[in-house]
Image (cartoon, rainbow, N blue to C red):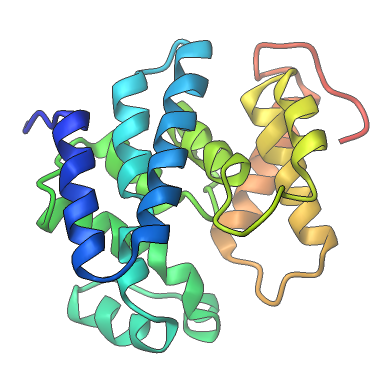
Length: 206
């Protein structure tokens, strides 16, 4: 397994995204990676892996939405109907492929966290949760996320509670397309939180 140094990777990501005129994406990726590392340490998860996954999670931003279906097919990525209808979602899968092919990432946990950072998935890992939540805390839009205070309150309970809060928030907003991985994550998280399987006190009113 190739060992990647996060400090060197940070420089590589900067050069790559600068060449493609995506400095704002670089700033977002670094913010997510740093946030993911802090969350990981708090929950006794590998902070270096969390940081690396965060640094690479949005590198596919170099491809605009109208190119993503073609790019994904060229990379051999299997697409579902929801991704064909709403190509923005494909970027998580493309980022995973780019992390493998361009940045030599071979760690399956890191690759998984990159691949599902937008939708999560039903059979998530703790690293998946960390990167998913970090991406929502350090979002890529201007200003403060409207859901941030409530998400952070849920995070005081557990990573699972925070992820579940965000997914419920998203569904309440009436998203255009509900990805099957998001549906599965919602079901899994609902069961985990209601049964206290997250290992913390159960958060109410989620």
